[in-house]
Image 1 (cartoon, rainbow over the protein chains, first blue to last red):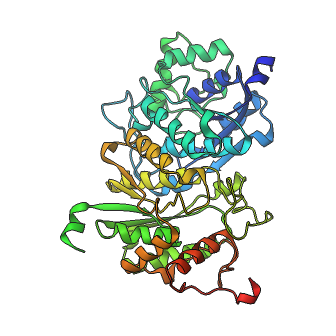
Image 2 (cartoon, rainbow over the protein chains, first blue to last red):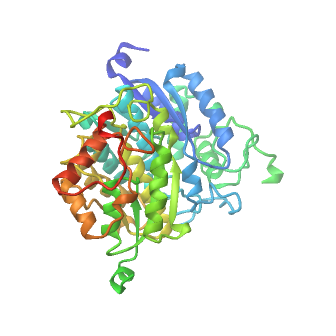
Image 3 (tube, rainbow over the protein chains, first blue to last red):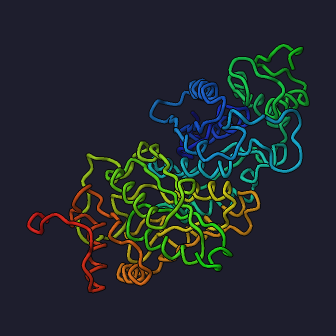
Length: 233
Length: 233
């Protein structure tokens, strides 16, 4: 850790285990010590994502006291999303128009609320989240406008919250740029998991795989995670 | 239910089981059908509050599909509050200056996020919460400024969220006025529970009991819930 990193203090980084949040953590690590927060909320691939979270936390040498896994199972129990309902079909291929079936209503508010609560307890002034607006899937809670409004709510609703910031460093990036930034920073992309469907070999077909693969392809790079044989896609 | 009530549609009301949220539900019921949401988050008297929630939901004849109890145990697991830490002493008597030890960091953001997620799923446009700013305990997430900011975040971060409202009808009321309003509206105050310490007979000493008792006293009314014998207070 550089002196600059020491000077900037602690940041709480939401780390799903996917590509975007891993690159976000690498960007935060240039300026901050990291506390990393992961949530399970009844999504299909929760166990695999949690494994990716721990592997990425190990890579960034985050101490045990500064990593937390939260069970937000109630989010899945409220219903309303194909991501948490094993009976609902998963959309495949390129994102269509409008809000996709995998949208978990207002999910990012829950993740940010947890990060802000923990930041307040730890005395951290900085919360980072790897949401992507343009190249992502049209989720309303991935819009920059939402994060700006949530930051205002966090400042108003916490003790000494006036200086609290919610940082979304990849929000305007294409998936290609995210991959390139990760490579530049030496982020452990091989440890990330994005597939909505599988635990061992990514399906290569769901919307999340499609976006990820298109990013690596545009960057002229091979995705280091294993995929099902092409014949099965 | 009146025709006016039908016209206003469904509201999600956060119902802790305490005095303020019960009166809030009675106020919402003048205009809306109710969906009621309760959260356990590791607070000491969770079981007793849940019992109060169900009794109040029964009183308002809320159907089973429109009542939910969410486990937000992770909030307690993050630490930082005497309300969720059985080893920490509970403050007694009148609230002091500053943020009290019972403050659960950014708790109301979690409750509102759950209410907004559920409202989005149900198609409801209205979320009600019985927070009190002036006569309460100086929690930063009970300030009107916070609720205005959170409403903006909810509008920005949900599907068709532009018309979504977060209503705080008792936020500027004294405890006396809340008791009087509850009596005027026939709210079931005898079913509510406020004590932070006990499950059967309220202690009469914790901050929450103190505020409640002062409200009934100022209104010139007896509190209908049972208390420990005065000698033990």
